[in-house]
Image (cartoon, rainbow, N blue to C red; front, side, top):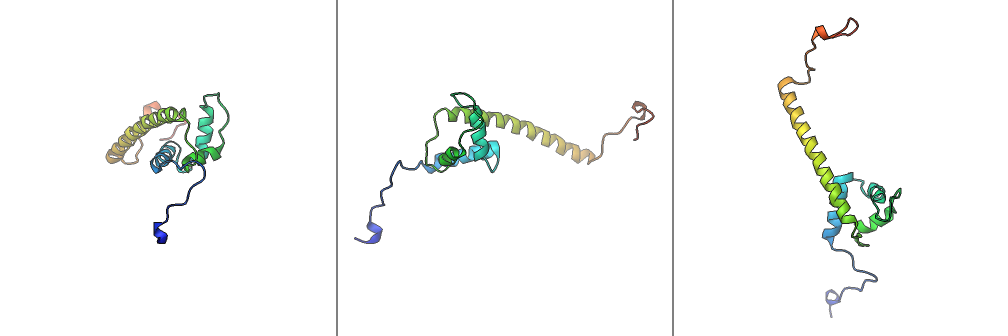
Length: 126
């Protein structure tokens, strides 16, 4: 038997989660909370915990989910879905605002709108 023919070593404990689930969790975390998402997710999910709000969950638990060492509880998926939908609405609002600002820059540059001198009192400058 060649070394490459050896069966893989047995792993003690549960098998790791499939890479897709850990990848999706990381994508969700980054999209909602940014690059350093694990600790903020622990705080956020602590507030949404089904047994009652708490200041935070153990950040190590989130790290274990992200590493595929622990399964994500059933209650987390609907909460993350809701948070993603809220984030999508906010991103759409920001996108519209960015397009509006881009149009303003195209047409007016950084110039402030003209000031009507009749609306100023004697102490205002224009």
